[in-house]
Image 1 (spheres, each protein chain N blue to C red):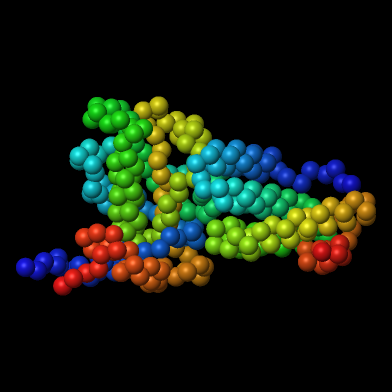
Image 2 (cartoon, helix red, strand yellow):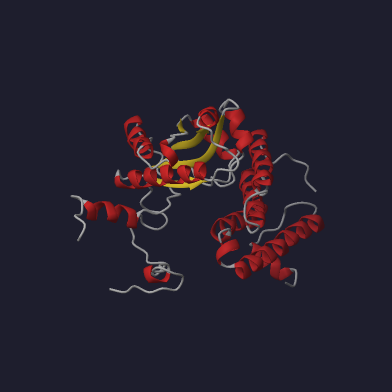
Amino acid sequence: MSATPLQGHEAVLNVIRTRRAVRNFTPEPVSADLVRRVIDAGRWASSASNRRLHRFLVVRDPVRLRLTKSLSPGLRANPPALIVICTDLDRAEREGVRIEKDATTWIDVGTAAMNMMNAAHALGLGTCPVTAFSRSGLRVIFDLPPTVRAELILMLGHPAKATGKAPGTIVERINLDDVIDWEYPGGVEEG
Amino acid sequence: MSNRTVLSEEDAYELLAYLIASAETQLVEPAFYGPRRLIEAAAQLAEGISPRVAEADQAWLSQFTREASEKKGWARRDPQGFKTFLQESSAGIAGELKRRATSGGAVETGTASETASVDGK
């Protein structure tokens, strides 16, 4: 029995394969429509127990961008937009999540971010995730209530064409067979 | 030695924020990020003061800023190369300090590599 690929599957796989972290952006603003489409992709990401604990803080104001950069050692670029993925701790509590022990909340940050990065790439935008930032600092900058915790910053913008590696370049860094174990550690594919 | 102010208040605060935030993030970041964050801060400082220092001082600052931007990623990819860069940068800034101390301020010109060679590195 074989699977029936969805229409356009090669295009989807190509987006996944060709996405790269982008740290060089043009100053061109990112429209609200594009921001919404990127976040919508995050909204569709898998979520443990379908809990949907995350909120998405959009930052495009130049002053807030600069302040965020000052408090984010991992943000060494000048993107025209940021999306801060936050966890709604109130909602997490209502869902019975043990927030400091349950790794699924972090995994869900990753699934949302990955969907958003691939969507942005498909839309012609560049992204780069940032986890090195001061959570306590961002809380002050954005007046985040104690019930909202910033988890990950996504740089978002139009890639600068002339700098860095060209987005879309396929680089085979890891051999597929080197990372697969069939049935048991070290197991090889049979049939 | 010159006592002129070479860093704007705004640049100083941004650097201060960067250093404090780096100290916080370094609690969880891999250890190799420690020297990288420090060198990024140093480059930020060099870039911030460069427009206001004497012309003779700008060559080394520009070269250091350029090299730091290029080589900061070596902390992970090429630890030995990164170590060499840090050692050369230390020697370079030492040469700058020595030149400034012995000349009564910034009067000589020269690139970082020239300065280093003068100091017998």
